[in-house]
Amino acid sequence: MKDGNSTLSPDKIERLLRKDCSGCGCCAQKCPAGCIAMKPNAEGFLYPRVEKAKCRLCRACVVGCPCLQKRSAAKPISAFALMSTNEKVRRQSSSGGICALLSRAAVRRGGVAFGAAFDDKLKLRHTAVDSLAAISTLQGSKYVQSDVGDTFIQARSLLREGRRVLYTGLPCQIAGLKSFLGGATFPGELLCVDLICHGVPSPRVLAKYIKEQERLYGAPIANISFRDKSESWKHYFTRMDINSKPARSEILRKNIYVRGFHSNLYLRECCHQCKFKGYRSGSDLLTGDFWNVREFTPDLDDDKGINIVIALTQRGLRGLLELHENIDGRIVHKGKIPWNYVINTSAVAHPNRAEFFRELPSASSVSALIERMLRK
Ligand SMILES: Cc1cc2nc3c(=O)[nH]c(=O)nc-3n(C[C@H](O)[C@H](O)[C@H](O)COP(=O)(O)OP(=O)(O)OC[C@H]3O[C@@H](n4cnc5c(N)ncnc54)[C@H](O)[C@@H]3O)c2cc1C
Image (cartoon, rainbow, N blue to C red; front, side):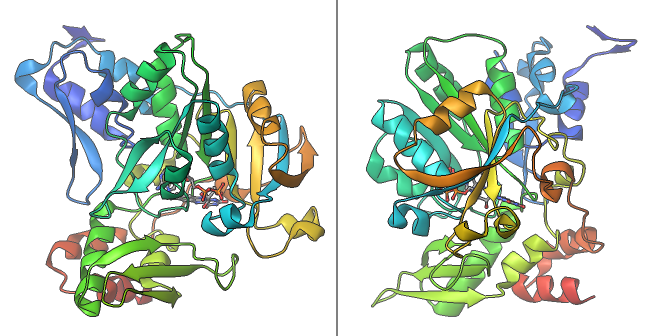
């Protein structure tokens, strides 16, 4: 088969898919021959592997890949400062709890909410939730890339059955889902919410960090929260729940793993030239921490967490209206959106990123390695 002037082969397809890959898994879920698997690379991020003998060269994967498409920017409609009026929801959430409220609204209407939850081995996976009780597993920003698995296929089946689906994820994951679904219409309604994203860290680094903490505490870590709010929202605290007898929690200020994340030491390579910045994911709503809320509505700044929510489609606006009894907040801009550096600009890689990943396999302490790389 020809691709432009050159012959298309499974090897060439794999190279194309891997070049700017964000790990959204659209190609693997789209392949009609089931010959693409997402496998970790040396840095611990998932990339597509094509099983050469099975590949039919149909190009469904390449055509569907959101990283290979030219993307247009959505025009934001309005921006809101919003938070849940349910204090428990807000406390458990990373910002104002809007993602949790949207998940509850979907489930209450017989729908399904997809989001990222840790499994029992603290691996982050996208998962479907259809009960109010399970929504807490999705709450909280987890600073590691999640594995979407086959959730795009699951979401499509639910939409075909006429169910309502809420899908929350990073912009690259929403772009992957939208591309997977193509322009098809379904009896069910889909609402997509993406998070303002600084960039996403390597699952291998987090796994090593957790193992090291377990050695230190002499007990398994049951859960890790990167945004514990018991002291403050604005100052990041990491809470580690330790499965010891009696069970205990440690709150870590200036946590070394979070410092490495903020310093862009182990983000995915494509995060440094993110193709989905500037409202290019195809999402209905975009949300993040409204750090500078004080400049717009100081009365809402109580250091317990608040979202900035940007409606990008009418469907997104309708989704927010459904929350009216459970939210407090203001429209902060109609048409003109407050400038947010992270929405528009990719994170610059730490100068020691390559050296960090070179040394990672042989490092006896990942914390010490991060510390050394940041100090250098
Ligand atoms: C890796 C990462 C980087 C971020 N960077 C920024 C930033 O630079 N600036 C900013 O303003 N906001 C950033 N955010 C978003 C912010 O931290 C909050 O997640 C967002 O404001 C939603 O808050 P909430 O209270 O509504 O969500 P909650 O009710 O706490 O729910 C969190 C939602 O996020 C989803 N989620 C959590 N972790 C992940 C993950 N790793 N991948 C995909 N989905 C996930 C869950 O499924 C859930 O729906 C980032 C989030 C992540 C995960």
